[in-house]
Amino acid sequence: MKNRCEWCLSSELYIDYHDKEWGVPEFEDQKLFEMINLEGAQAGLSWITILRKREGYLKAFDHFDPNKIIKYSDKKLESLRDNPEIVRNKLKIRAVKTNAEAYLKIKDSGRKFSSYLWNFVNGQPIQNDFNSRDKVPATSPISDKMSKQLKKDGFKFVGSTICYAFMQACGMVNDHTTSCFRYQEIEAMNGK
Image (tube, rainbow, N blue to C red; front, side, top):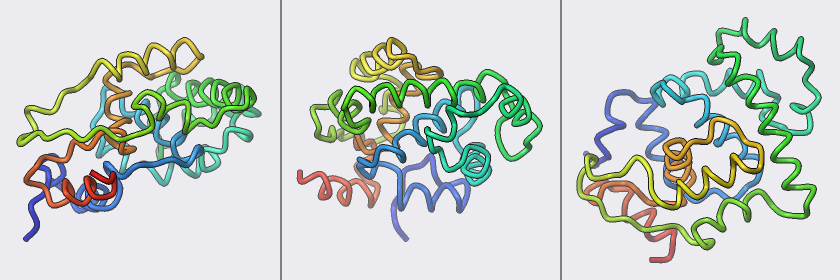
């Protein structure tokens, strides 16, 4: 029996996500764009809700292809509010298009989205060493800075708590608890 972070024990979907994806450093631009939008969709909800709807999001938003999303008409965005496979919040749906526009501005300036985001942690994952979930913060000075910059650059649903959850999900911080079997695996991936 493997020791895991407590938060993932309530469902097989959570366990699978925890064991294979959460905390693994992600550097692929479009995948990072997907995750920033999924984390934004989570605002006010539980992550399991978004995981259950993830396939629906991929279908509804053309696998988070920003070049396709920026072409969505108001009618298309409105029709997504009838899609039960995603969170049908009007502002969150519209935010995906707004975020696609902001993402493409960064790309058009000659920068990789990955570099833009990873610069907040100097290109290297932060190795935390929390021994219990209640010690893991909801925000950090870095997530505050990331949130401020993303908002300045036109992104929506990117508050500091969302940014910190994004950093955890995409491996910018290793917040697996020290007793979790993934803690040392992620630490090894990060060359620590």
